[in-house]
Length: 316
Image (tube, rainbow, N blue to C red; front, side, top):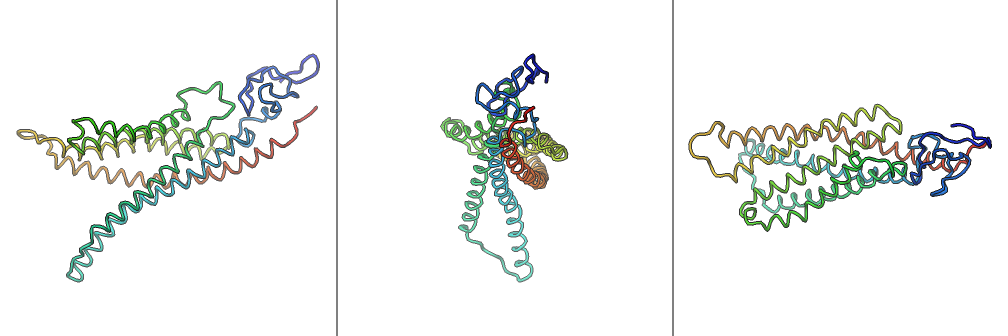
C-alpha cells in the first residue's frame, strides 16, 4: 500500500474483491468496489475464510453439513455390508454345530435387506453429492483467475459426469453386444461411474486441503492430503479387482492350458478386493473424522466472517 498525492491509501499489487472478484489494484482504499459496492478495506483483511465473503463461507458451512450427513449414511451401509453377512455365517455355524440344526432363511429377508441398504446408500450418495456441490462453490475472489484444472473445477466436472453416466448406461444397454452379457454391462457401468467417483473424491479432498490452509489448520491440511493420496490408488484398485471376476465369467474358456487358471485368478483378486475394501473402510472413518473437523471450522469461520463484514471500515 502506498499514499497518493491526495493522501489516500492505494494498493499497487493485485487485490481481488471478496464479493465479486473485481481487480481493485491502485484504487483508493477508502472507496468501495466499483463493481458491487463492497468496501475495499474488507478485501484487505487477508485470505482467511473468516475474512472472506460471508455468503460464500456460509455456503461452505451448509455444504459441509450435508457432506458429513451423507458420508455418515454411506459408512453405515458399508459397515452393514461387512458385518451382516459375517454374522449370518457365524450364526448358521453356531446353530449347525451347537444344536445340530440348520437355518433356512427365507429369500425375502435378503431382498428386504438388499433394498433397505441400497436405498440408504442411495440417499447417502445423493446427500453427499449435494454437499460436495456446495463445498466446491467458487470463491468470488477467484472468479477471474482460477484455472480450469483446479481441484475445485475437476471435482465439479467429475460429479456432473458421474450422474451423466446413469442415463448414458441406458443407451449402452441398447447395444447388441452388451445386451448379451450382464457382466459386460455391469463392468462398463462400474468402470465409468467408479472412475468418476474416484476423481470426485480425490479432487474434493484436494480442494478441502486448500481451504484448510485458509482456516488455518495445517495439521488438518496434512491429514487431508494423506487421505487424498491413499484414495488415489485404493479406489482404482478396488474397482479393478471388482471387475476381474465377472469379466472372467463372461469370457469363454481358452483352449489348452493357461498360465493362471481363471478360478485361481478370481480367488486372488477376491482376496485383494477384501483387503483393499477393509482399508478403504478404515480410511473412510478417518476421513469422516476430518470432515467433522471441517464442519466445525467452516461454521466458526462463517460466524466470524459475518462479524468482520459488519464492522465499519478502518479510517485514518
